[in-house]
View 1 (tube, rainbow, N blue to C red):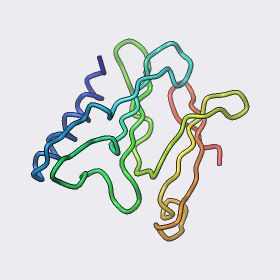
View 2 (view 1 turned 180 degrees about the vertical axis):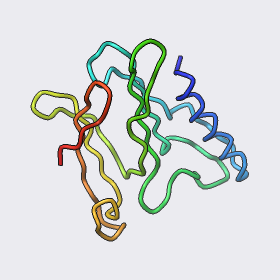
View 3 (view 1 turned 45 degrees about the vertical axis):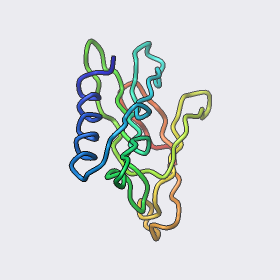
View 4 (view 1 turned 30 degrees about the vertical axis):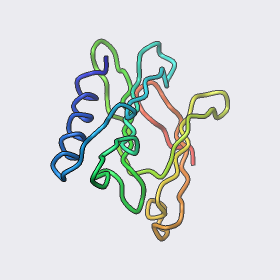
Amino acid sequence: MEPDNVAAEVRQATEDCRAIGGRPNADAMLKVDDLNGDGGEDWIVDFSKLRCAGATNPFCGSGGCSLQIFLWTGGSEWTRVFDETVQSYRLTRVNGRRAVAINMGGSACGKPNYQTCAKTYSIERTRLAPLR
């Protein structure tokens, strides 16, 4: 079962879809994994996976779709450590450590938005640390 703050994001997404006349299906939005290796469940909320039948996904635009990452910080606490618009992402390893490689719209790197800006973040205990 997802934590309350993660569930609230999904609930808001489905409400936003309904508000524009869509029929939401959020079944594929969540991914759970121990991203930082601390033994706790971490959560990825991928808004590109929201199906909003009959309407345009309100969380996607020319630069991509919203992506949020929540890391478990102990007890019943999950902290949102990433909340950006991305074109794509993939979990990877850099120097043996878990990392997330993200493609964003070019505007994230001072380029035209139709171009791609690649960023990689090391997944630390309580944060994402930029690598490049």
